[in-house]
Image (cartoon, rainbow, N blue to C red):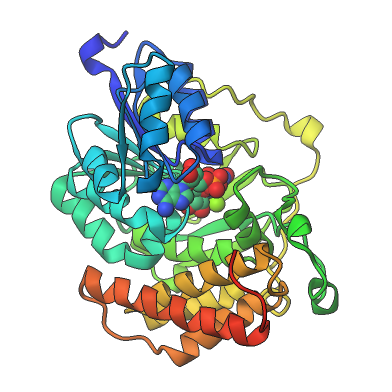
Length: 399
Ligand code: NAD
Ligand code: MG
């Protein structure tokens, strides 16, 4: 049994989200070895206060500075000793500071980059769910982690699967990896039907319960595109050695093919607590609350090729990865803006890939040696895409 000195002090960034809830569920199962010492959210103060009452962290932080008084007063009124903080500087300082040794990076979108980088530079164990930070600045995040000795444990289910299958293998042993994709709620649909889908249909994922942005990304297959780029950075493999297979049951999460022809796969129920337990316990295995897989009751395992005509985002992401430089940052930013406009009912579903394609064409890849260059590309792509959206739907304003 670990002594109190071995307790993992975990910062859960994005605590009020879907991954945050799964992380806190696993942490609460292991009071002898895991503790949520820092909880962070974007702007949902009431939800953050409720989590503080249960998990009693040392620190709570909201990204929105205007929300600080409500957080501070709410903690005080609840009689909690948790200290209140606000703003991205405070968030990054807590991710990098002595208040935690482990960081669950579960903020959605490019907004997670600063805290992901801060944790990597500070040498933390980094449980990385925020795939957008790798798409936007993969080289920088990986170099920062290497330089500071930060251990990155991927939390995306497919990348956790690859991570688990790669255990104890040597560089050069792997021929290729294959990420599986559920195909999302519109698998098998043609473009005419896709043109009509609503945000409510798009976020109703058949297999996974997730936040709205990643749910739409799953419906467009952009999620798999982002994951190919994520895998490229995490595992150092080129485009042609990262395959994608649609697997509607979402029980096989990824496969690793070795040079000897052997393929290892990781299977499990679609519940993110497994990947989080892997990250929190590694190299030990700890209870996640997820049941084992009963293949007899599950029945069939089906596989098919992705339909890149109906869902061009996967091809766009691969093209951005191959172009390199600022292109993945442009892809990610245009996609975030397009998904946000779709969720607000301002544009149709098929406009998402069109807007991403337009941004990639209008803002050709440039070298991206610095964080500043990447953030400038991100800002340019957001500006460009917002203008395109305003042109597509004059008279509607962002919410
Ligand atoms: P979510 O929308 O449920 O939660 C997002 C969290 O980020 C919330 O706590 C929110 O308060 C916080 N946040 C938003 N903007 C912020 C900002 N500017 N500053 C600080 N905090 C901010 O999203 P989710 O589904 O939990 O996904 C989180 C990340 O994990 C995403 O990058 C997603 O791609 C990745 N991921 C999620 C799943 C899943 O099953 N949900 C699976 C794999 C990867
Ligand atoms: Mg995934």
